Amino acid sequence: MGIPADDVVLIQQGNSPHDPTIVTVNCPDKSGLGCDLCRIILEFGLHITRADFQTDGKWCYIVLWVVQLQHSNLLRLDWDSLKNRLLRVSPPCLTPLYYDQKLNGSSAAPSVYLLKFCCVDRKGLLHDVTEVLTELEFTIQRLKVMTTPDGKVVDLFFITDGRELLHTKKRRDDTCRYLYDVFREYCIGCELQLAGPECDSQRNLSSLPLVVAEELFSCELSEKESCMQALRTATTSPKKAIVTVDNLLSPAHTLLQIQCVDQKGLFYDILRISKDLNIQVAYGRFSSSIKGYRNMDLFVQQTDGKKILDPKLLDNLCSRLKEEMLHPLRVIITNRGPDTELLVANPVELCGKGRPRVFYDVTLALKKLGICIFSAEIGRHSTQDRQWEVYRFLLVENGEFPLASGQARNQMAAGIRRTLMGW
Image 1 (cartoon, rainbow, N blue to C red):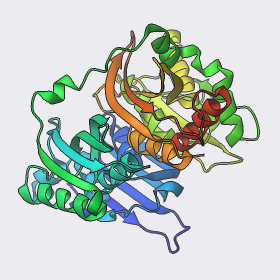
Image 2: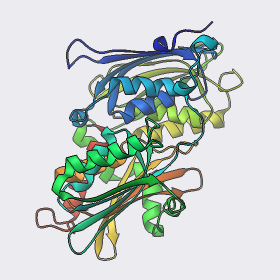
Image 3: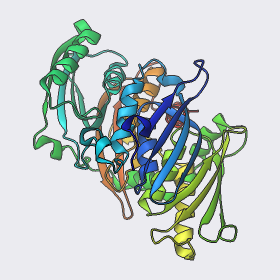
């Protein structure tokens, strides 16, 4: 027996703007489903305040309490589109009467399109364009931004469509028309077409100096005082991440009790690690924030249905959880020849998906700080144990924010981290 598609995902909005919206998903289970759902929630600019979920390995029931992030409330949130996106990643019910192939989509990678956007330069322009693309539910996969000597900007956005409609002429025409309407006299030209081989050439990041790469990707980054400052700015006490393992309480599951600083995308990060390590979460509870900290209880198993008893596997799981909870994103500011460069990096899921809204948040933080961007690019970098998505920004010196100053750089890095972490 199955259930109607309309009942697989239910969204109940709060009675007032301050009340959370309750998202309920009731469907057959699949590996990594919780991670996929939380990724979409984060992509829509929503923050999970509470969560309860359980599964018997065949069927799952998930309840998420979500609120819109403070700096995302200017974006229009399409709840119907959110519901459709959640439906697409949820496995179909078995009853043929209710099976909708279109809603559940294909497992194939989405097509990448190239948006060429030429515009007169102005402060905050890159974020404003990114905001429009985010509102239209596009994901920026690759990017090349160049500023010309005559004050123009040429942006090459390699994007995928969350609505999976860019193959239609109407969706492409509507996108270009909307960009023209928003930027009016600043807009010089806009073209949108299926990306060709140039997309692959933009995939690999231009070479990172060895010293910069070691600082950006080192596990010891979490010990750096510069990173501690950003957390102490947002919390009244030094950060910590505690993972307690209990193999005695349940005969069939390993209990993970987690406490850490509350931050944006926290539940996504935890489920992403579980998905990548093939750890199945049978039951979980994600409690409301108390004095800036979150408490989580996760009953987990290996893929063979047994609890986790291997000390090496447990140590690896706990280490990864602590590392990702303390630093899901890396931020450094360095010199690139005579210029100042900002680098932001986050781990990529094993399936190849990067973290949502990172580019949006970084450009927002730079706009708030009044810092202009000369050029930007997004690419991938591989280390020994994982792949990273790296965002590189060449910044423009201005009198208001002296980029050569160490104090100014620390303030900028702290401001960017606060925006990324939702503090």
